[in-house]
Length: 130
Image (cartoon, rainbow, N blue to C red):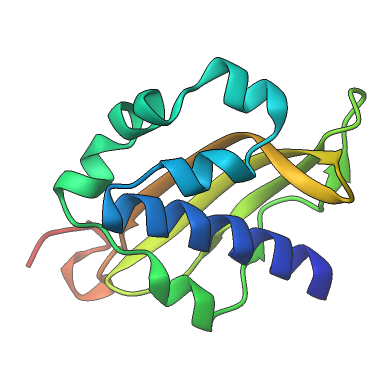
């Protein structure tokens, strides 16, 4: 479990660094070869533009443990599947990663990250309402 947490946080920290700085070259170099071939650093910058433009910083996840929505598993293609969330406030950070073993490490082949408002029980559970 500790190794899974380290893998998740390391990849989210690199993702966050790219988004907060606007420089996707360093993050791009850490991705799996198939991911790098499919997405240039420029395409990554375009794909994650809302994170950069809205100055979304998910660094608070580094101080918390992830909550996996399903057990970590290896799929039929040999990819490590990691899905879950960090219950940060005021927004939770959801992640869905597929990683391939390469060069003695687990490298991203796909990543999906959402930042969603946490429901406020005092407003009947509706996120974003006050």
